[in-house]
Image (cartoon, rainbow, N blue to C red; front, side):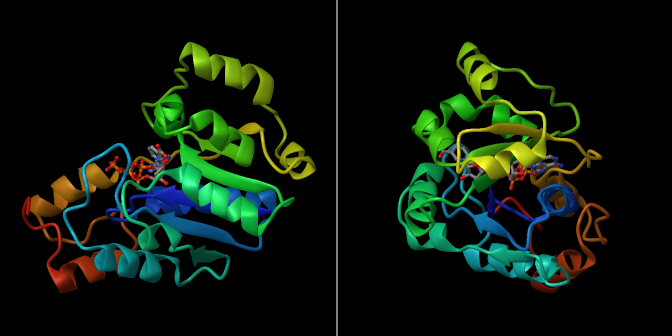
Length: 211
Ligand SMILES: Nc1ncnc2c1ncn2[C@@H]1O[C@H](COP(=O)(O)OP(=O)(O)OP(=O)(O)O)[C@@H](O)[C@H]1O
Ligand SMILES: O=C(O)c1ccc[n+]([C@@H]2O[C@H](COP(=O)([O-])O)[C@@H](O)[C@H]2O)c1
């Protein structure tokens, strides 16, 4: 199985680490790849450099041998459409099951992603719950849920793509946007961040203003 966790990671926080660990455990993965986007398709571009986002990801995942980075989106120009990355990964692994891990807020907006139906044919979507985000599907998503949703993680090993699984696990109340606001007010260690990321932010004086 190939597992990809895409995100802006501005910055990576303990909510990301928590859901990624749960995914590794549920699917008994050897490796889960964090895939930072260059230019988010549906939100404003990060105010810090890509290099800082990658360095923070690197220090955050360093303690875990089962986490790695996939930097392919940084090599493309234009919005980081997941479709293009998944097409590349599928071409590299024609028959292997591919998991794309997202949070509940992303799932509720999935039908607004570029060519979202093609995405659901290239990979399995695994959704992790998020505080204050209940499943809220549009008609399109309801239809997708009806034909794709499975209730056992094991079912995703039996096909290369096309399934949808809601991964159970403890929710973790953390959001990069909230953390950025907190960091603007105080540069004290932030409890929603791995210590190594807090340290990196302090060292490089990141997120001190809106610039
Ligand atoms: N605490 C969390 N619980 C569940 N899913 C999460 C959590 N934090 C992030 N995610 C999911 O991880 C993916 C990448 O998230 P992203 O890097 O955009 O961080 P974020 O915290 O959602 O950022 P922002 O607050 O700026 O929107 C998205 O699919 C998002 O839904
Ligand atoms: O391809 C798209 O249209 C698209 C739209 C919104 C989000 N995504 C992807 O979903 C992942 C989480 O996105 P975000 O914006 O919450 O960091 C990340 O890999 C994004 O590239 C992709």
